[in-house]
Image 1 (cartoon, rainbow, N blue to C red):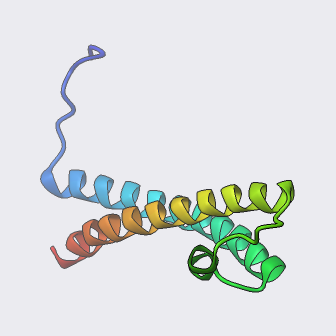
Image 2: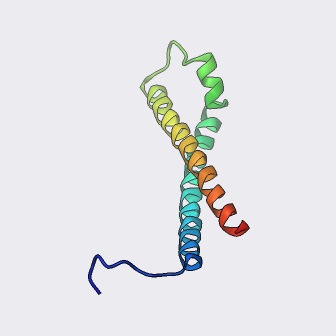
Length: 101
């Protein structure tokens, strides 16, 4: 068989491969999301507020370098968590479709 030869599988087999691959990817993304949530929770405990609240009230005028660095890190974790949640929603639709078929 050539490197570029088409693999002939039934539609059912292809659907199973896609479903299993999607389920595995969902597990990976959920694990990454858990890490992001842990970092976010640590920063929420450290500063006693959520990131949304911090954005509302702003950084204190006397905030030092550590606070600014934490803000940038926190923003990054929040953004990553949002991206992961969005991807997970999309992938969950694929998994649900595969099981409905």
